Length: 84
Image (cartoon, rainbow, N blue to C red; front, top):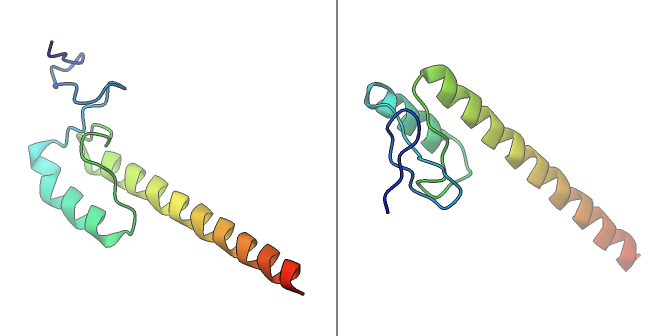
């Protein structure tokens, strides 16, 4: 059974995400998405209707990348301490 959310966008995942990107910002979305290193399975993106929506989501991906990098550095430090 196909489900649609309140704006009429097709729900594409079990969790209820649509992954909708408004056609008028699609090029902007692709440009910003390709500039950052984290990839997300299509359909698990939030719905984005404005450039501000894109910027907010891209900023959150960059923040997650920063956290991943910090965690990796912490793990490397712990491994070095264990070695010494």
